[in-house]
Amino acid sequence: MIDFERYWQDCVRQDREALRTWFCPDARISWPSTGEIFTVDEFLLANCAYPGHWTGALLRVTPTPDGAVTECSIASTDGSSRCHVASFFTLRKGKIAALTEYYADDGPPPAWRRELLNT
Image (cartoon, rainbow, N blue to C red; front, side, top):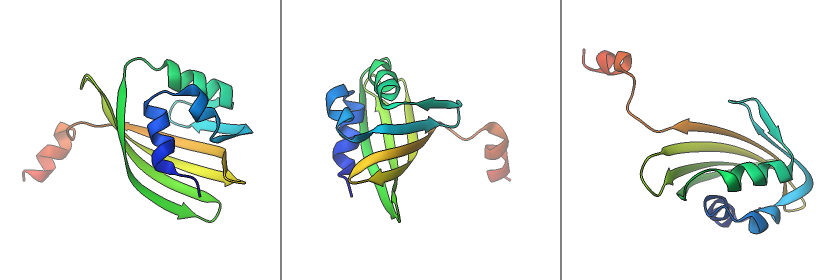
């Protein structure tokens, strides 16, 4: 099992060289919500070029037979953006061979659900 706390800190610090060490060279990274599939180099470019400065907290790690699922909270340091991310890791020889991630923006529930809760 890899050290997911360190992995996520490398992500939010946007440390390209540290991040590269976590991946198998042929790893594939998928963001199904936007239909993007990345090579390691493409993922590093997207992660490290993402605008702003970030902080994050690893909330949960759930081992799976071939890797793990993590839940992380990520926020911009200027407070303009917050989200949660669920990440599904497939590991091979202690490195990330595949990664599928789902990002969800934090915010209040929509009005229609607030109305349901107030009845």
